[in-house]
Image 1 (cartoon, chains in turn blue, red):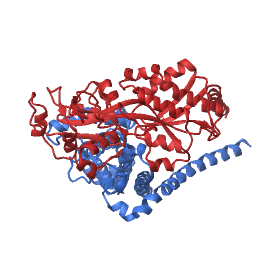
Image 2 (tube, chains in turn cyan, green):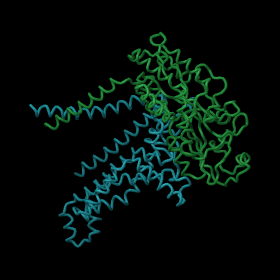
Image 3 (cartoon, chains in turn yellow, red):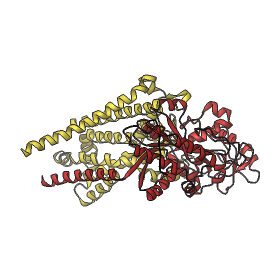
Length: 283
Length: 350
């Protein structure tokens, strides 16, 4: 009897999750129909004009899509030189040792830091540094936001890829050593080649995380509604424009923001789906 | 399984307990603009202490507050901009605007060694339009003959979030600069041609403090409490005015419309700070909605009336706002007197 009740309870809570997810999607679609109906879906995605003046309202998502994609991919690029060595360190060189445990704890700790703290750090430490290096006049922009984003996604990329690296079978590695391969050669041709798709998938999942990051990016990107033309340009991302303008938006602008939310929802869903598919194949 | 059951029980108990508490106390709920939030926090805390009525005010932005009032889930909304005729027509019933205090928008800057700067509306408009780009521009220099302005690029900083502060600022610039009125207009968010943006007053103030050569606008309550250098402005009478609670209150001298729906920027009063503004509480003229009882309606009206008393107005300066002048208070009281419940006037004891 108890078993049955427990089973039903489990089923119910699982169903609720599915319902919530479906409800969110439904709400986003319903909320964005006004904007899509007014501007046309293709037009909304392909124009960069964002003019909230009530006499001449004009909304398009292109500059935010470009801003989001640029910051996320740059962050991914910046995070590779840190997360890959950490993954190798934990998954191969010091696998199972206390140092690796300590290292992975520290890296995972990075994931637990609230994003507003990253934003503050970027604002008070990284930004003055970028100004004093002469990279940018005011220090806000794509570059600053991407650098902080990169640090934020390191734990996601590192912990998952070290998992895949440690899963490479010992027989393979020992076979390579017995043929006289050095450790570097083993890493290069055995470990990387057999865990490549897993590592790739972990970076895809980290990218999905970067796409939706809001607070830290909002604090550092400069929040200007334009298509960035250089790394030091200020810009806006989909998440940051929603966070910025939602409070005072109504009617068409509110609907346009919800439409941007829908686009972001779809992009992250697709990226996560691709990541999961690759991992599934790997396993 | 036993621990699982006891956790469920605990949660149920908590929910019941929290329900019971709200029922036994008298409560008023509101939501809206963040600009007057520090004042309202102080105000409603002291109201609770003296009357035991709990007023909850959520600083979710004017837009959110007005949406909540439209959905009839709050007793009042806070807003820094009055409803336009179209917005009034969109509301399910007639809404009145009760001014609660005054504030201003101040121009904060970061120029090392300079603590006294004069500007006028046209210069500010041209800086934010990207037409004046250097601090030693001749037009700025001609207003500041006593100081040596640096050959430094001006970094304009504006609000990234939709904001009543932006509304007031752009309303003033639209009045003094025809090009501004045509290109950007008056709104809570604009299509800015130059500069960079930060979220909220704290964001803008922080960016100004961190950026040499920057100029930005923040709410006076924020600028005053932070003690950052702010510019003196030339008003419509040609006087250079420092933003103070006195010069802000002065902007509401002169004729006010009966419904108090007016922007007092670029005031004609000779001692007025030109970018001053009211902030309002919005409530339905007929209080019988969403199952509200007559008692709740009375609570709401009593609270509104209390905000206009001398005691409550005196609190404005403690948090760097300015008190309402007598004329505005008289208009507001008349509006409160017109509030009804099911068509009949509400009688209050206070």
